[in-house]
Image (cartoon, rainbow, N blue to C red):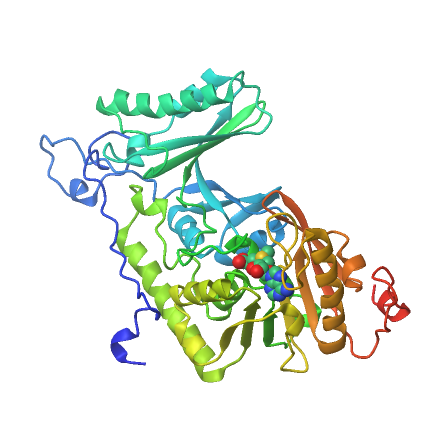
Amino acid sequence: MPDDRRNEYRGKNPRTRATPQRDSQAGPGSSGPRTYARTSQYDEMPAKPLPPPEVRSTARQQMYDCFASCPKGLEDLLFEELQGLGAMDMHKASGGCSFKAGWPLATRITYWTRFAGRIGLRVAHGPCHNEEDLYRLGLTVDWWNWFGLTQTFRVDLTTLGANFQNPRFAQLRLKDAVCDGFMNKLEQRPDISVPEPDVRIFAAATPTEASIYMDLAGENLFKRGWRIEKGEAPLKENLAAGIWAMARRSPAAQGIDQFLDPFCGSGTIVIEALSVLCDRAPGLDRPFSFEKLKPYDEALGKALQNDANLRFNAGLDRALNEQHFTWHGSDITQLLVDIAKENLCRAGFEELLEAGVVNFSQRDALTTEPWAEQGLIITNPPYGERVRAKGADIPDEDEAYQRLFKEYGDVLKKKFAGWTAFLLSGDLEIKKTIGLSPKRKTPLFNGAIECRLFEFPLAAGVYRPRSTGEEAGPAEAAQN
Ligand SMILES: C[S@@+](CC[C@H](N)C(=O)[O-])C[C@H]1O[C@@H](n2cnc3c(N)ncnc32)[C@H](O)[C@@H]1O
């Protein structure tokens, strides 16, 4: 690789993000926040009348209670990930985890998390029984230390059983608190932008208390920045990362380095898996809200970026030089295969495609073949109204699905003995159709759809031909 590319990650569109500019209005020195520290220059000044001391926000130095949300079912993975990134005092909740972190760590977590959807840094917490309590809580925040008058903002509210007469009005009262906070301090207020705010504030209220958070993510973190073409019902990237992590930690996956997604669609599982295998930061190519907040430190931001670039370069080099894994993705629809390749290249993995470390091809899943004695199939096959089973020319969707999965079960048994298949499906009774008994079923939510990640061990030579789709031979039953 040429030397001049060493500090850029490689791909079609090398990263050239400008470091976000801070807002010059109402900077840390322009107003009096509740906590401050003098600069050392004042300590050394002689004893004579002084100009008012420079007042600084200590937002960067404080520890914060934070919350990370995630798709339901990924809480354990998120918990471990946060722990690995250095978060403290974590607690699992349904659909997320709370933790403690200082500003630099919270931004690093936002940049590196593969499983979270949003990260919020708590700026207020207190009793809250009605709309006016929420307004008063909002007034306790020194908003002008977080963002400036020229930045737009929006407010969101999640009511976790809160007794607001009108949740929409409660949300407006919180917005009023932000505006009034600015007016009281600076006699001006920033504008609102609902579709494209610079700054997002969100609150969560129970029947007795509320918390207000500065959002560090901006757009939901499942958006990694590489997807332009969506394809058909694509998985969210953080869910795909979760599926990959769950499959990889199965005992059956230890030492396995050959991977196949035969219903790959736009390539989400493949790209998320490659990101882990090549140490590509999920936040490498997207902007974040934290970059627009006042505590943001450009030097720290650049360091985060440089470190991520170096790690990705090293990961790509290793994948190319050692070829320590192979990934194949296929789909019956050529357009989706093209989209998957484009997404892969935008994520910076073009060299892996050229080197044959990863391949995409157009193919009916029923015609896929193993190329190694052992491997993992990790996939999200079609199921439900949005994604049809394709291939056989059968107009009735249910019949087409039944037929595809009966035949695909036979393909797995006959051709892929020695492999292990991980299928994310909303068909909770899939074993009846596919004719295989899962060793493990992990509940996961694909948006609102309750799914399972089914693990099917495909042992060699243990399957008997079946007479109906409902029967499982004794050898299959023994695998339960
Ligand atoms: C739920 S989508 C997969 C979405 C994918 N995980 C993503 O994130 O883009 C199911 C995919 O199965 C494909 N498909 C349907 N029938 C197929 C068949 N017989 N063989 C291969 N692919 C098929 C569809 O084209 C669709 O892309």
